[in-house]
Image (cartoon, rainbow, N blue to C red; front, top):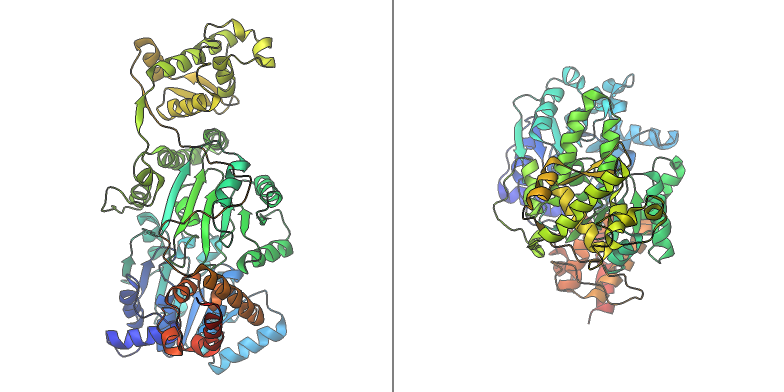
Length: 610
């Protein structure tokens, strides 16, 4: 604990060590509670600056702050960033060779470090608690604290090893930090860690710099390539896929199309995974096609887009995964390439789960479906899941708010499609998939239609006045409205629901939403589309500063964003500082970084500024 400091003193320390002139929302209140020696539970969204809330108190307090972190790569990122800022920090983990481990342990014995990062497994190693007592622990910080809760989306049993430290160190405060947790998970974290009358801080879940889109256009690799080509070439991002095979397929297709991409999944050996993660972190690879395990272990701030190729596991998981974009506060895009067939596949997987797990899984799927098909503000939907009410009707940062889709009367076409589903099922006995139904409507001459004599049906060819995409969209809308259903256990064959039968017999008026315009597939290169919310800055100077940043990062063997974030480089390219004082005035340029890098950045600005 330290004597209470006033706001001016705290801000002076914030600017000196981290280069920020002001705190972000909730940060100062959390810092004061940590400094006051209280147990703390703090929930700040990804990119909200939660690490600073315990790093700044560590700088200002005597003793060692022990940070429990889930992944070695995440520890390394944090230690690299602190070292670059001039804060003495280290990590002790299984990746270290013994000479390096001995060097760090000796430093801990001498009291050289302010922060120590460890994995939860290390806490129960024989003798480690004795070491901690000698090293003078000032506080324990549990990062990614939602991992301790079985109700969370990323439960890790090893996190349960943290709780016994409470009894061994009864006078030492415990602080839990996370970026995502429902009310149920928050309560469970507090209980599992035995937090005593904790100060609870729950910031807004809103990530105002993120734009959310659900793309209902045909999901093809060509559409993904077009979407990526419409973005600046210097932007990095993640494409999440639900299977190892899909990560490989997408990475190969993107690379063949000239978009540098790598695949990342648990089927790769550890060395390959580490090499590919490092390539992405250091901006050597533009796109990482990965399963959902990727991302938690990195602190890469300049991820400009996150794409979901398959159905997210849950709305909470979707929020966490999209939150890996735009951690530096700059605009970033979150796009889900939606396909209704994926929903049916998930339903099949749920049906194979133990009966006791099916109800919860179906509830999560229903929330995801509601989000995907919603015509309302997507930000409102996400925040509502976490119990937060968005104060505005429209956010201006999602597809439904930016390009609202009108509804129109589709009764005649809907009657044709419903009737065709009924006739095909009646003729065939148990029904077929929606693709075959559309073939019948279009009057196609396929092997199945000829084999089953479906050209004799009264509905054969009655939909020739519409194209395949129109009928496919209408089928998706009727699925959404509950007028037809797919059977996940019988190869997704479609049938009329009771509501669909009533609508067919009673000729009920049916309104559907307009389809999303398909993504145009561009064959050549052209100027990148502007990113919503981009500020005006010298892009050529920004490119030169990025090259310098990469050079310095290579010299120091750290990720480029550890030197300066994209937000700092853009500010330099916007304000064009010419003196050390002007450079120091830019948010994110602290004293240590100014001393270490200032002259080189000012020289690059002088050489490249217009």
